[in-house]
Amino acid sequence: MNRNVWVLFGCQALLVSMASFVVMVGGLIGNSLAPDPAYATTPVAIFIIGTALSTLPITLSMKRFGRKPVFLFCSCIAIAAALMAAQATVMESFPLFLFAISLMGVALAAGQQFRFAAMESVAPEHMTKAASRVLLGGLVAAFIGPELVVRGENLFGSAFQGSFYLLAGVNVLALCLMLGFRETEILQTSSSAEPRSWGILLRQPVLWAAIISAAVGFAVMSLVMTATPLHMHEVNGHSLESTKWVIQSHIMAMFIPSFIFPWLVSRFGVGRLLVAGLAMYLVAIAAVFSHYDFANYWVALVLLGIGWNFLFIGGTTLLPQSYRDNERFRVQALNEFTVFGVQATAAVGSGWLMFRFGWQNLLLTVIPLVVILIIALLIWRRPQRETSEDIKSESTVI
Image (cartoon, rainbow, N blue to C red; front, side):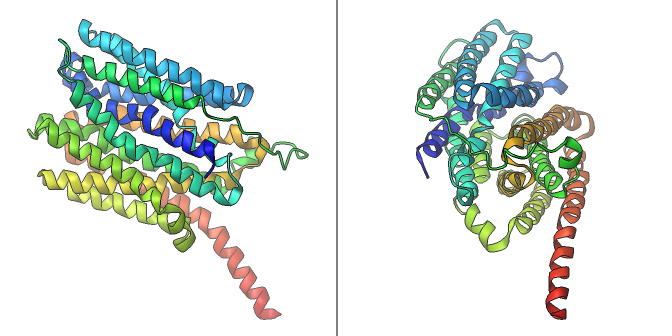
């Protein structure tokens, strides 16, 4: 792995810690500032909406200005947003808090491009390994984000004001580290060919399999994870420390499989890992459907994290098979907008579903999403099976 991959690994650990930070504290602050408890998860939803709405302009900006300037600019946004959120806790202003959180979502949209920047920095045969290594930075982020919440909770007069100051400091470190990133020149091997139309691109089963895998992975994870701190801490009375450990374990489980994911792909293939990810989601839902002990939450959230890893990295691995070099920014922008748009919808609906219809009905909404992904995978795999059968038939004739 070259220098860029390790720089991006460090930036993933620092900048992307905002995600675990907001998941941990967003619902808790929302519950105290929102006019209605049903809107308690709105900060988490706004955070994800900010990411979803920013993916397209940020990705296209990278095409025009390069990745590094946009990465640096978004790091500055993250610093300013953390300071603004700290002030919102002092003023007890829910609108200002939501605005600050939305800016953090904008900054995170740039962080979601780290894996693509890493894949472009290595030879094609090392792309899966580069993406996995960068995403391992999320393993560090699993500790940093929630730890900042707990360590800074009572540092100042307003609850969690110090947590946001600490987050601002972490984002400053990410900005400094990003200065070491070297812009990568992409060899346009297919520059002689015109980029294909959207009609042609969207007729590729592999494109839909890649996008839907990542989208369903994020949607289910966001739906359950966003509601878990509220259901565990506020509804069932588990301590903040226990809740923190469940969230940290979940985020660690999201990224630890990245150590062996390249080997798993070479051994079992992407398709089987996607199916395994779906199976883990179903087991996770069953584990916490009717029993609410600490162990049930922990097992469910760990399986949810591993399932996300298989679906998200699996989708990321498939995506380059659907575009040429001169089409990459367009397809990446579509992928990111779709994935985080679906995740935002899930986060928005998470608190509403739990408070209006109950925890169990929230969990049951996972089933239709799983069915959609199964259909996409079957459509993607069918042409491959038909091609394989044709080759076997020709060999038999010969």
